[in-house]
Length: 227
Image (tube, rainbow, N blue to C red; front, side, top):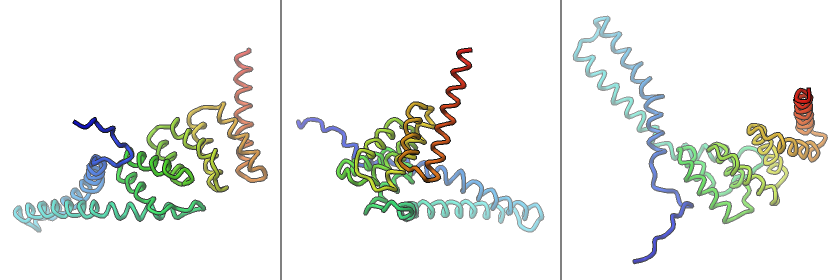
């Protein structure tokens, strides 16, 4: 008997929970309101004696068919729309998209976050110089509530060779992580680094002001404790 093979988390699993979640959202956010509006119009005509009971029943059945067909039509276009949306997003700004990168973005849009995380980790591990995969992985980890892992990704990216736009993105994301996490010790270090590295820019001035505010607040708190 061959030994048990370890689970390969780099491959997307045959898990349709994301699709079911999309379907449920479509039913609640689109299907029910659409059916309610259509049926309300039919009931209005019925109350006004413009249609009979039989016609009303037929129209309600037709409404169900229309709503179901609309939901299926939207679901069938999810993959192509998700890929197109990902290409549009990745094509913006100064960070060039990598070929085929939209596959992971499509997984994210469909709610398959763990599969997307595994795929991005594998892509980045196979080519550490592909910083776009690292940046997207970091953003996804933040979205999934894995702030510590996102920090590790951004720190690893910083240790590599990054173009100026990507380096500033990493710095901004680390500042945002520490700000939201209430980690003033690391936040002060990052703000000081940022204000020095990008001195003369509006962003650097803002970082310097924020650093000053934090230090003044900490000094005030310490004075209150001493009193």
